[in-house]
Image (cartoon, rainbow, N blue to C red; front, side):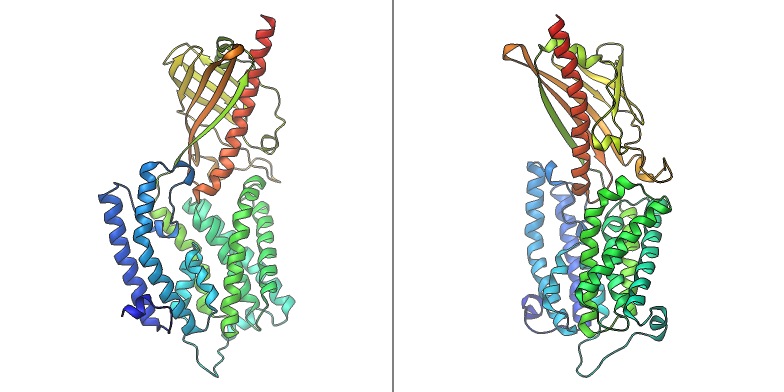
Length: 455
C-alpha cells in the first residue's frame, strides 16, 4: 500500500486510482477544515482546492503568512501522493508522463483526473474509434473539421459565458479559466475525430476559435471591448492549456472519445455552479499614490476640500470608457460632512470620518457609480459586472509638511472586487485606481501651486 501511495514506478488500475484520490480528498479536506477553522478561524471550502491561494498575495499579512505556510506543509504529503498516483495512472493508460504537470494547474487537474478515471487501460493491438454520429458531425477533411471545430466551440463558449454572467452571475474561475480551457480542449478533440492532429494544428484551431468567440461576444452584446481585452491574457493561457490537453488525449490512442468531450463540456458549468454555491469573501485592497506639491500644507488642504472641475481626460483607460473623476464638492465641514466625488458614470457619496485641516481627510464610501461604460458596437451596454462587482469602501488624503514649504500629498483608496482569480484582476483595478489617483492629485497639485504663486 505504501508503494501504491508514494512510489512513482508501476501502474494503477481505475478502481485504485479513483479510490485513493477520493479518500485522499476527503481526508485532506477534513484536516484542512479542522486546521483552518479551529486554529485560524477561517472559512474553508472545496473551492480552495481549485484556487489554492485564495488570498491576494499583495494583501498577505503576518497571520496570512502563517496560515499559508501551515496549509502548504499539510498539503505536501498529499501533493506527493497525488503526483505519484497520477504518474502511475497516466502510465497505465498510455499518456506521456510530462502531462502530470496538469495535476498542478487549476481546471486542468479536475479535467485530467476525470478523463484518466474513465479512460481504459492501454492494450496492445487495439484501436478504438469514435462513434458514428460523431464522425458524421465532423467532416473528414482537415479544413472541414477545423471549421466545424471553430463554429461548435465558439457557439458553446458563448452559451457558457451567457450562463455564467446572465444566469449564475459567476465571474470566476469557471468563466475566465474553465471556458477557455474547455474551448481549447474541445477544438483539439474535434479535429482529432478522423485522424491524429499535430500539436501545431491543435493550437492554431484553438486560438482561432478563441478569436471567433471574442467577436461573437461583441456581436451579441454580452461583453464590451475593454473587458474582453483585459480577460484576453488569461483566456489565451487557458486556451493553450486546453489545446495541449486535447492534443495529449487524441495522441495517446489516436482517437477522440465522447467521454472526453462530455467532461470538457461540463467542467466550466460545474465550476461556475460550485462558485455560486460557495461564495467567497472579496479581498480588501489598498492602493496608495503620492505626489510632492511645491506649496505649504494649508494651501494644499484648501485645494483638497474644494477644487473646480478637472479638464477632459487624456489618459487612454478613461478614453476607452473607464469611469474618471470630473469634480468634487463637500457639503458642510468637519466629521459628518458629506463629500460628493462626481465621476463620468455618476457620483460617489462619501461621509467624512476624519477632518484634520492641513493633515488628514478621510471618508467612507456609501454609494458607488458604475466603474465604466462598456465600449461596444451598440453603444452603451449593461453587463452584470458593472454593478457591485467592484466597490470602493473608503478613501483618504494625507498631507505631510516637508522642508522648503513643500507638501507630500498621498491619496489612498480601499476597495473590493468580486472577480476571480482575484490577484489577476487586481493587476488591472490597481493600475486603474492609481491612474484615477494621479489625475486627482495632479489637479490638486496644480491648483495649490498656482494659488501659492498668486499669494
